[in-house]
Length: 316
Image (cartoon, rainbow, N blue to C red; front, top):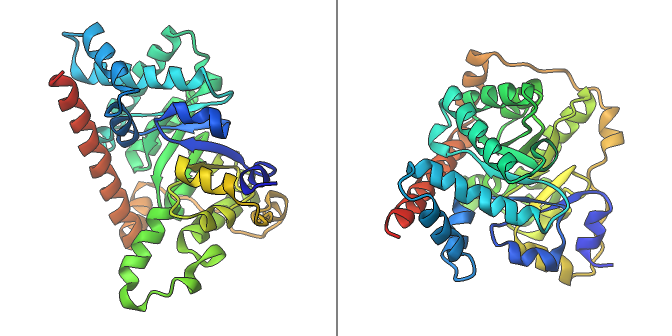
């Protein structure tokens, strides 16, 4: 048994790409996209026609609407291949505007429904894990629109998402690892910070244990991996979203991949419940330099790629 098949025994495997032609090879259950992945995809000959079609068909419409139609087109294509769900992201520039995030999510959902897609079962709306984003997700969940809270780096963000009863969270393993490695500088010891000791892995383990111990139904989906060691250390997490490159490495290896995270064992842990109001959440984030910096950096990067995608469309 290869490592990818071994992982599937305990964890739902999700493909982290806009390159949906690769899905046949790895057979993921779900798929996640973001502006950066879509931008990367439409610059390839196989996917450029999707961008050209959106620009031509909806010429004269506001550019933000054309972007959403392109995202939904990608999502619909992905859903025609995979059996599960696709995550489609709200513009990162709305990360600090609850009402605008809800309105944009409503439009994306309406576009999916117009394609005949069962939104409640097959679509997750991706929103950044800011205080405003979490509140938007809370409102969307009350309307039956399932959300994936992304750019999640801290315990406080995870606790707030659980309280908001969001469907799924995406803690970013690799970006947490990146921050600690950069901060460690010459003192960083790779071997001592690998596997279960990886700071990104430890963050997901803490969140997973908290959710299971409190009976929180929000699904935990580890994301943003740098190596297969991080993935192996989280075998047993509800879901893991993995790039095609790392899916390929897992499929090519027959090394043992033991069960690492155990929901039944976590459910028995004696962990104190936590809660945050808005001031408490903002202070907790302020105290966590890594989470604050990586959240801001992630929003800036996704916003920049959204702008690049718009310029690509306007130049068409």
